[in-house]
Length: 171
Image 1 (cartoon, one colour):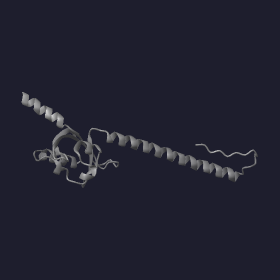
Image 2 (image 1 turned 90 degrees about the vertical axis):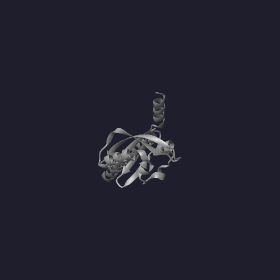
Image 3 (image 1 turned 30 degrees about the horizontal axis):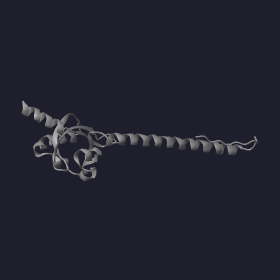
Image 4 (image 1 turned 60 degrees about the horizontal axis):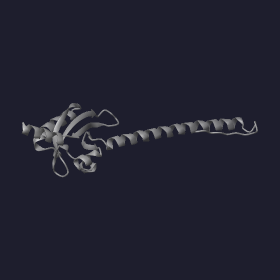
């Protein structure tokens, strides 16, 4: 931005006028800096939203006492649930009974504040009541003030599991 004050008369501005103009220019520079910073934050947020919306993974955040505090939009595309449909519900109610022990152990591990960098596989009930195989990784970001929870990245591996089963039957 540019701020310009001119006069053809060299004595047009008093010392007080120059002080006011200088103060005004300084305040305008601060305001422009804040506008630029806000624009940069909006651009980063828009980029993050675009990346999250189009990922093939389901990203969920489980806060202490508030499961499914956040779910990425891919949840609906992959499992059929709108994020608000499962917010606050117990994640284990969606897990196949045969996989509950695995899911509970992983959840206890995560709630202790530990990440699990190795994949945990379990079946999760889709909205249409069919089972999807999910492969999940957890990262404990409870101490990160921007997240404050356990981040679960889950990928639908149903097709892979079906292929593996078909190959085993052929052997």
